Length: 374
Ligand SMILES: Nc1ncnc2c1ncn2[C@@H]1O[C@H](COP(=O)(O)OP(=O)(O)O)[C@@H](O)[C@H]1O
Ligand SMILES: [Mg+2]
Image 1: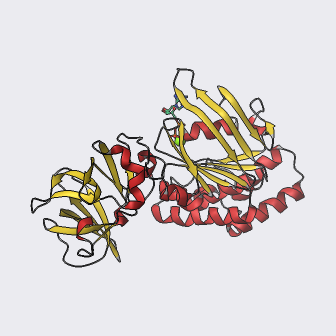
Image 2: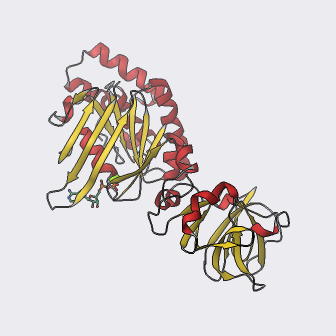
Image 3: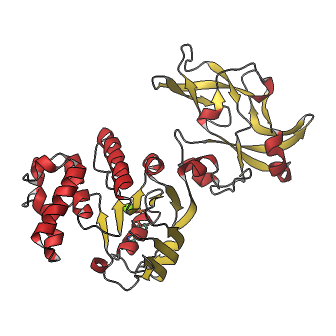
């Protein structure tokens, strides 16, 4: 096992494109870290540099305290699992797992021990004689993981290993990977574009965009305290709502003014609670963005008239015990509330929702606008 450290790592491809701009990260021994971000943000490039499959343009990468910039991939003592499991089709499950060890000249008895142990951990013991085409997608992916385990590497690198599996299998397999990590405690770096997968797996998640780390922290910290609008928008289901408006000083203190009127002709004005006021005061008279998670809108009006919004319902999506209700103001056409399931909420009707302003976020304008209430 080993710690993995990246210092000022940059990658410029031969065509001049800068895929990774300045990557700094200390991954602790035994930690499970997930790189997450939209397609093209530089996740695979970073992982491939750690694996040695891609040169580093500048900066240093160390594994277990040793700088590996010039170390050949096979001498880095790490194992990588890709989206396409690339098993050898003509070899049995056993041989697929044993192959790399055989190449390295590991004694036969040791190979046998490691393959059988990996097969037991992964529930493949009964399948060792099968060929890959006789396996389901999930089983093939487990063989690919098994091939990595038997090498007893210092670190595992996973690049979207579950993308080829159907939704249900993805959820079960990610649970297996997590419990596998809890057993083996091998340092793991895992790449995915799926924020839910990142949240469920990572000890820490690294949210990336355009070759830069936007935020790196535990899943709960990132969810509760996103540093900017990009992270806030990327993490959480359904995504956070953003209302662009202005901050004004009213008779009862600061108010967020959305800029349009509800069906009864009243302007949407939401009081900024004391817990938030000091942080946003500098924005009085200026544009500001209110960030509301769908869970911050609830269907229990009447408790505090001031913090409610009456909007028209566009679409209702039942989810069993809960439902997502997409609403609209004249200015913002898509404001989602996640409510407890109930009858009587219908498209085309108005709905009055209470807004939990004590939990609200405020951002500077812009896609990467800073979170003002961290
Ligand atoms: N060999 C290459 N030459 C030039 N650009 C590349 C090369 N490989 C990847 N890129 C670009 O670098 C960016 C990051 O790619 P990648 O690391 O694969 O992103 P991700 O894994 O986050 O989807 C993308 O814009 C991609 O098009
Ligand atoms: Mg990728």
